[in-house]
Length: 216
Image (tube, rainbow, N blue to C red; front, side, top):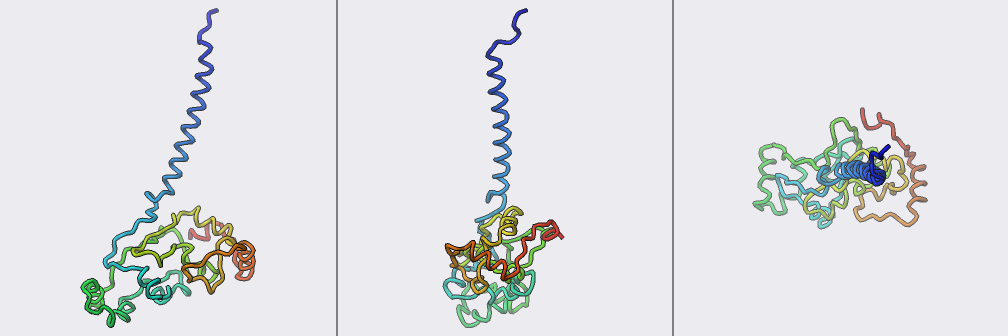
């Protein structure tokens, strides 16, 4: 009986099969990488605000502590967006006639809130509590990045579930002493794991990874 397929057909079949597996694997990897990319997460995307506010100027330049503006960060789930009165505490005296700050003065005069564009905006189905995290030794810069170096605010992390779980599963890699939570230039020491394990025990940090922790 004559041979139906040439012997080279075996090689072609194996090569085609391997190529198909690599192609599917590559497409899956590409999709996963795209999902975590700044194109999707909008990380490093400095978005326009109604007023050009610089964290770099206020935090690094003027030495203003995070809690001066974000007053409820230690006591509630929401860190708080400062009311215009907080701005006017300084700007009624400093740059009080600057054209750039007229929207601030108008907001104060008219008792109308400034409509800031939210940068770190989690989905509605995600529960996040600022007070729990800062009181457990999670630094502001751990999630928000070095805001003291940002003329315009942007997010530096993906804010995706895998990023959150990395910390929830291994808190000893990220926690710092409570007195350093608001320190922007804090650097983890060489013995971070040893320090972290001690702080995890001292602050009674639990490795909460059940769905109901965040999805309520």
